[in-house]
Image (tube, rainbow, N blue to C red; front, top):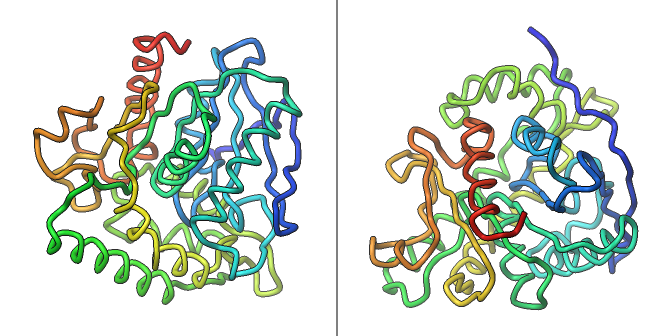
Length: 299
């Protein structure tokens, strides 16, 4: 089986964060194209999404980066691993992109927790000309109290599960096999699972360890849904698209609670996919994203 490799970026730059941490920006694709800025879900890496963003490289100027304590970034303090800090990180990221690679309107394409971060960022300042959010963990305002409690409980359970994850492996293939045996990854191609495993691990004395350790992932999930309940994505006045996994799939996160609310969003879902839809159906996801960008006159 062929091993997927990530091409060397056209350019790269390091972003200095408020607490002394850093984030590595990588610029790929067509420097003359519209600029797309892309990041990933919790515990993953931007490079794990290469099957998706590789489809954008011919036409677009694509800048990818990992969230703090993920991927190619150094491991920092656990106390700084929370949503407000990541929103502040993102504000620095978009300014650094313009500073290092030249100013351009930016289109954000984000998945899961990075989608929630981008929405909070958009509340703080107008960073993006448009956003495409894949299966974002956001909720409409005014949910019944019982529904809010259920969502908070979901976050607590996810945090508990994350805390018990295996954090170190003798070989990266061991993590890949764990994913391949998990129902959550059954729709992801095996060579793409291998890429996911290789790009979410870093070498250590024992062999390999998760770039985002279990305690860090657990801390983020502990409060993620509290923040999700505070986001109102119905109020933005710029082009915004939500693309979800199949609402009938076990691992999808439907961002609304009724058909009436869905109609208030520019919303699509990809049939027969889960929360990991960009890894499961990268071509379909890229096609939907580009179609929206063209319809919105963003490209």
